[in-house]
Length: 90
Image 1 (spheres, one colour):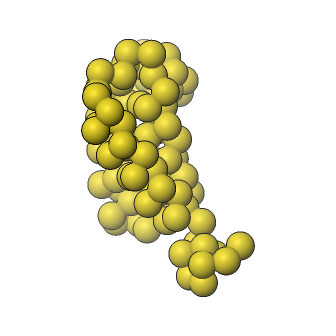
Image 2 (cartoon, rainbow, N blue to C red):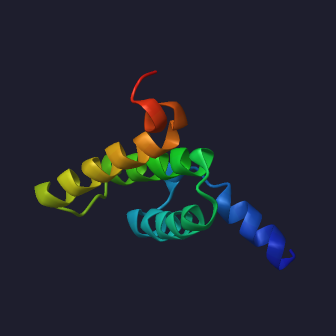
């Protein structure tokens, strides 16, 4: 299997089948990419990764960590919806 094939198959694994640490690593990569592109679609993917971390059965954070993730999710959800980001309405 070529290196790019392994990368593609790893990224196609469902979020719920990955460890929280693997999801956090991917989340960091996505946030870095968003800083370059400002893509609402990418912001939506970030929201899905944050949700996957929060709902993961092996989530190892405490209540404060969960609260922080939920605040981040609200911020990224806002960035994912350009209409909301521009005028505050839907």
